[in-house]
Amino acid sequence: MTVLFGTVEYFEKEIANAISNEYSDNLSVDKKLENIYLRLKKDITYDFICSNNFREYCISNLKVAYENMSNFIQVNN
Figure 1 (cartoon, one colour):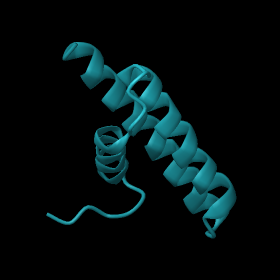
Figure 2: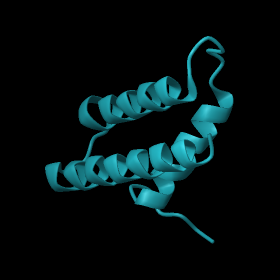
Figure 3: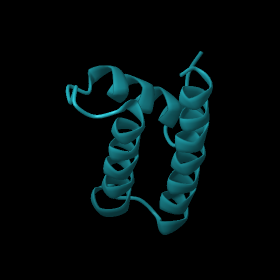
């Protein structure tokens, strides 16, 4: 299945991959998740060249993905 850039599913996969590759062993999973969210949001806001509408769409979907992953982690801990 193809996951399109900017969708909630895309950001969920990006977050999951980043958590598994995060090497900060002294941080909790929640803190790692927050750091990844903030890093992706910063990248979309300042580094990604696109229309403002698409930027807002991506940030909105990133927030939903972050909340979904946060809830998933809380349920499984």
